[in-house]
Length: 66
Image (tube, rainbow, N blue to C red; front, side):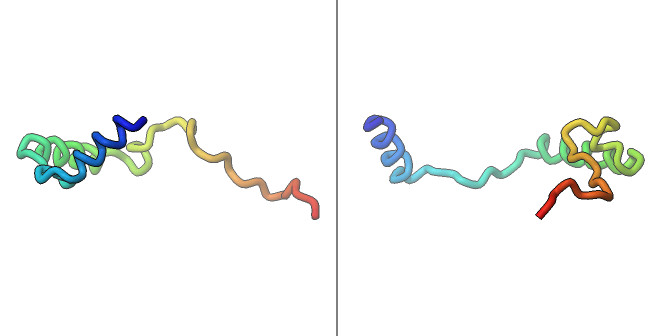
């Protein structure tokens, strides 16, 4: 644990810490292509056609009793 803290402290104090990543041209082109493909999809298709991982629809009646 102490070794980890010392390494972290040394890393934070070093002069060559880059917290912001500048994307390469290839990365930018990949993102732009993905955006173009998503814009071609019908609305909602980019999220997938299944409802897995989504919240269930709200019921009109509440089961909560005060």
